[in-house]
Length: 166
Ligand code: S3P
Image 1 (cartoon, rainbow, N blue to C red):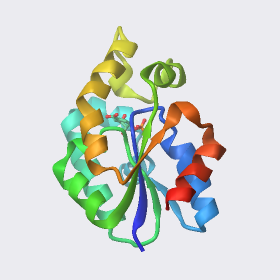
Image 2 (tube, helix red, strand yellow):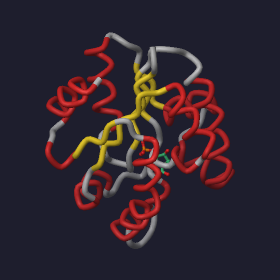
Image 3 (tube, protein in one colour):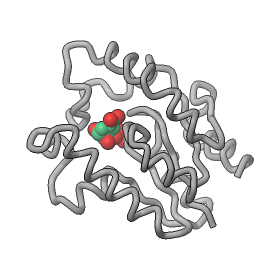
């Protein structure tokens, strides 16, 4: 059985929807960010502070590769996981990938003032999200088997819509 993999920008609902989806599919839910934190014993902002984004990406790639070996999980990935070509290949090979496509304005409302998102610790977080969307949207589309128009669904109806495609 392929793993269900959720991709999308910060605040797109990967963790919330992933948890609900896993419950409905009776599969274990795993969040790659949480797994990186468990393995290192520190929070993600600390990894960024100590090792920089490159250090975090290395840890994230190792974690995703290991998690994707187990069949039958629902995996919520960090927003930048698709930047790594190896991650994209693993997702395509072992996963059924859902892109949660949510308008930047909504992402901004959900993530503003969240201290756990180091990439948004900038003077203009909305501009930053727009830039990340421009950069990553093509990559999310490249890996996606299904694209959910997140502007049209709340968490529980999003899950129903995803299950219809599954
Ligand atoms: C990141 C998203 C975060 C986390 C890290 C970097 C990104 O995960 O992996 O802060 O590059 O977009 P969420 O998408 O779960 O917030």
